[in-house]
Image (cartoon, rainbow over all chains, first blue to last red; front, side, top):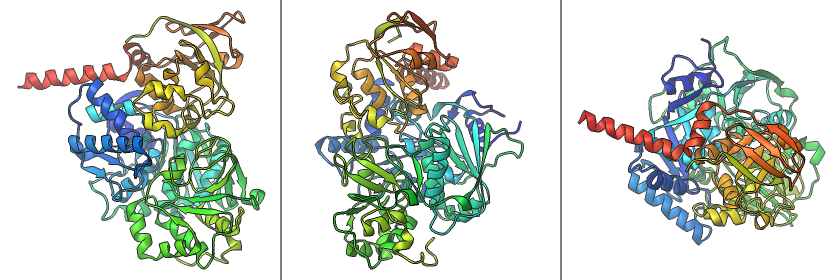
Length: 429
Length: 180
């Protein structure tokens, strides 16, 4: 029977020839992830309530100290300690300490831990990020993670698949972030609820792996179970020398069934933002240009990888952050920070008057290092802007790509990057 | 811990796309292991509902619009609602991770667009969990719920994923012992 990529991966995990949307399965998991907010409850449930003494395969679990670490207060330090102790006691191979890892969704791909054809789960909603690498990856809760760590298996409902076909090429300045914000604006925050988003089309050939991760990262912002992409030269090149295990890519059958097919001419997509207070509140940049800002945040698992920082630095080079605005830049991993240092990007940020932090989820979820106050307005390269996400429920958060964020920090108001930098230098997409 | 056949309580009404950061702002994730403390701050992020938790009586029922619990995967969202004293959440529809988490915890949730549309705050409700019927004593109405797949209903009945995993582990230990 013809199947989509998502269906094939779930069928293999369940040891079945074929599956259909709506089937409930018990499937084997290839890789699992938890962090400082989700490992303490999962570890407690697994050991104290489920009665499991060890985890099914310590080589197939990653743990990051990223959300409230380095500890923002004494209670977070306790969560960090519980996470550390559990990882040591269970012998978890891929444990990433503060200062050596960073945000889970950047760390796992960059270490080649989540691979094509695999079934991956993470106790974090943005675990759907990994699907850009041609795997099925989805966010789960702590009881789910406890079950996976105890058994190596979990229950799944096979999702219906929505196919998104992208034609043509993105225009100058327009990024993968603008495209996914536009798509979510079209279908809404529950437009793909519990479904698979399969991204395809020739436009993706010109979108690099880091930008592809930005697109699958935001699948959850449309309510999707997973976001997934085909395996191609770009995927192969990214994984060469990086993949920690052999892998088998998966393709959708030509006659696979889709619940719906959406087609987009990406050349028509404009530079845009999601306005407060919802990720589906899309507006072209021209509509919000001139909006006065208190803070600009470049960070998160969505848009703070090295290519994102290169674009931000290109815009900031030789400029200063406008008076009255603060610019906070948080790399999404330690490796990203090392590379930024090598390329001189950190010097550019510091000279511009930006605050450069250690790698952490930090301000994105209103944790620390950039939490917003009552009525403050922030332009952020993150993924979510529901009320209170970055702090006070009355703070206003606009979501954008990193070049727009950098230009807006220089101008003090939401600004087109072309007004600060004539052209993005060759080689910096 | 198995579910009672019927639940009775007063309704609290919430709108659409209520995300997990509104249900329990992330800053309270430091109380991940303390259900009562989380309960004190439940729904605090919903504009105008910052003192809601203190008004809830044990056994009250929450009724919400579409896509309830969207956003983060943090299980503290259903935990906080349960910690506040809510016995059951009814919604037009649930975001998938909130849905999974509730079922895995053995915490009853029901999907009923009819009830989400008709129920008003303060209505007295009685819910028959086995029949999937919601009775509204204030309005004299009755609403149907959408049936969940059998596996999910079974998980809920047995008290969630914890007893299920315990059984699986016992089975595996028995098989390992039999192999010697």
